[in-house]
Image (tube, rainbow, N blue to C red; front, side, top):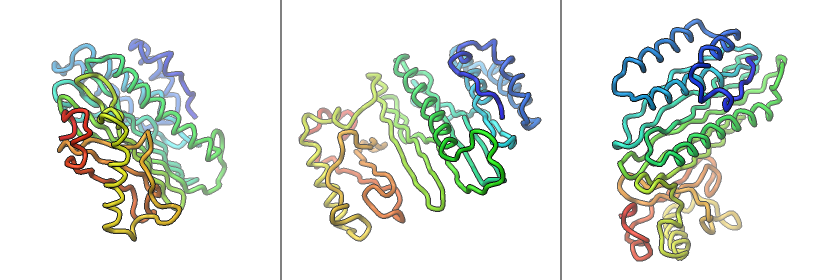
Length: 299
């Protein structure tokens, strides 16, 4: 198993990439990785659209791929190149790295965790905080899953048959709003799916909470009523009795869609049976207009 390297000790120093690369190549990995890294570096150096800051970010992505590709029982580890999601307005760009990718055919363990990296925000503190949050979350997800499996060392030939897949998608990409969806799917016989949305106000450089959008706390009851009304249209899909939906939480998962509509999101099993999967409710703006703080995002 490759030695774990403290990312914080190495990430800022681009000159250490080659040293870390040599350390990583001591593990059993595909021959294609060396040419992959060289091609990425070459392409970034010759891409005149990338400024110095973007090249440093690109080098950091390569370093993350090299240092966070961790195998189980010497199973070959495949590190993917970063790729670019189309420009987010004129302000932000999203890069993807595959932090962890393990496929152990012996124990039937599969791990695939992608990590987003945001660049180009005017608010550098917010950009750094978001990227650190995504990096920490990916590492914790991997560490917790490995601890759960008890695969810190040799796992023998026991069949475990579990997998975890985590990644993200861009939901909204305008000059004033960036919405990212982070999903995590665990499989062990049955599957568990969680989706977390992050709504970023690019204009003001802040992460929006649900209460930021409203004048007072009356939004809670208004949204509760709308959700219950929509559930009543198809009651068999949703939990009833003591398990029935009662109220949204102060940290309610939500996102603002490309049409300026508020969408309330629930994970699989949260308000409905497993076969239904994750559940979302679009809240009509008409029912919210009297309590909105402004019409900048919901309209």
